[in-house]
Length: 622
Image (cartoon, rainbow, N blue to C red):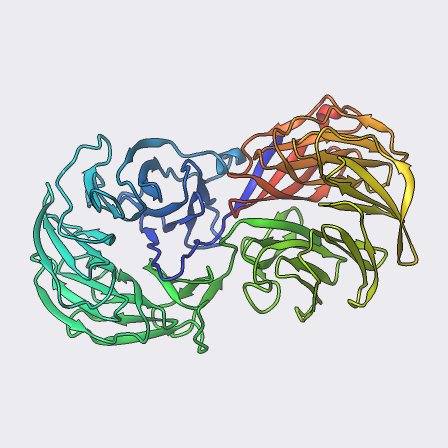
């Protein structure tokens, strides 16, 4: 008698042009952590691991950094407002664990306002008790403190511009190093951490990464000037440097556990492994021979079994130490999700950045790793409006004013639309494209059949048989039309007006009902003759973004900007199943995976970039 979580499929790290993203590794539990939107994602290095991913959603602003404590028990995460939170990363696994624990929020141990601007990097000491956080601020660029009490343990000084990265030597006596946009490396003794020296003149552009070797012997920095600089890890003294180490700026550094080598990630689409003595390049790892912006490497971390790098397009690339080419590439969304649709045994999802991915449905489960729809991460140049499929072909529309037909071999046929589409849909082997004040009908081969002008502004439609319903956002009514041989004609059927502008229409599979949601989140359920069946579906507190009927036309699952999920019943409209806070920011799409009349499974997508699988028990309606 409830809606219960089943699985969470996290987004990949969200990247920013010309900025590095520091991925943190938990060697004890073989996990990585990274920011995405307003969330922090913790996931196993092995995508097929039974260890469920975790999404931390307690930040109000866009997250910018996240780092595991060396113990693996805590994560320190930060956002663009300068707020930092320390939270528990307890590992939940094993038989008998309640599925709801997958979505359960970790306990926040402490939280502090560190800077007045974005925090760009966080470092823990080896005791997992002290933290240094750095970034952009008005009165300071960094702060060092104890994680539990927030007591200051020194001062971060010596820079004249925003600090881009920080690291703490993993052995006593502790040392710390920071690098900045001012081209300097500043070395600190401590704790309490005190300024020791500022080393300038070796970098000629922004320094983006700094890392102590695991044994503490060396310190390495690298940046946009393509230069790698080696310092003594105990004293901070300059030792050597390598200019033009890459053909592009260097974004990130990670050491091998034995301190024998370190890896750099660059905008030239490659990773390189270096020895600290002599700065000799011993391996080059190539993402793709074709040098593109999407393949710029903006992050890297050396894990137990792999070298994992992050491409600008969001791909996580897995390398084995001895192999030049990636062992595996894990694609995925790294932006808000906007649309979802079932196509046979596949689930198609689209994002606000134009990305489209296919997820394989196996029984009542979804495979963890998606694949590309098409041969590029972003078939559309921006927001994907809709996806529809007939079991074989898939049609997508985007705010790039394009309509794209994908066949089973991922080959695409594209046509330019006259303006930005509001929605697309399928009708009797044809494709309907809705604009703000007009509607077009295409054949399944993208041949234009007809165009009809509307004398009102609309935002959505639904079609059943020859009946076409459109929202009239000016008059707050539903307009009914008839489709006959490609011609769209107004109908004489009139619908009772709504309390606020209609935003969504969903006609039941049997054609008997039309569920209409308005901008306030309230539904009016109409019969096929336009009579009002019920107005009790009124539990949303803001705009509904998507809703889907069950195959037997008895239930509607609905999600919207209020972040909640609601299951409405036709026969018992006063009985509502609900799950608040289903997605951070809002639910942007829903789709049924299975349904047998007494229980079902459905998926949701959110503006947080996450795909979730749910189970619903309908025995309360028996």
